[in-house]
Length: 126
Image 1 (tube, one colour):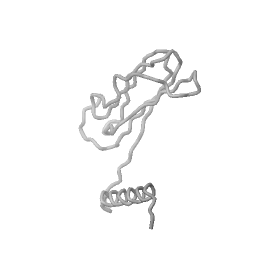
Image 2: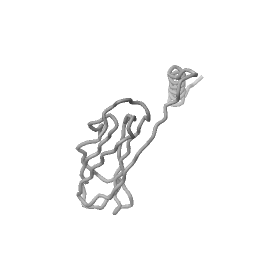
Image 3: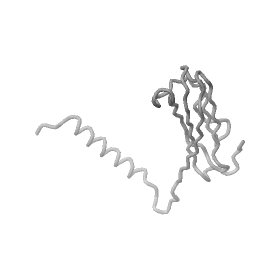
Image 4: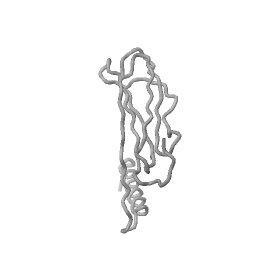
């Protein structure tokens, strides 16, 4: 029997993922974790700067975040940027994105943070 290497690789990968998910499944009495998302968008001037300080609600923890920038003069193609920050902020419930557009076109950037509500008691917040 001849096996297609690509197909058998996907089958093995799928089986491994199924095993991992079942091994990590929470007990029946566990409270499900909810994830909230908060985003901000703004226009970016040609060769302009952008900065976002995203904050999850008090008692929440920032799990991660990210950004997307598009060139509004060029059919919403990706906007080349240089980042100085795309990371957690000073507090456990914050995410920051700071950067500069690399070209002379107008753009629009959106930054988001994912938050786990109620994950932190008595955590310092801004």
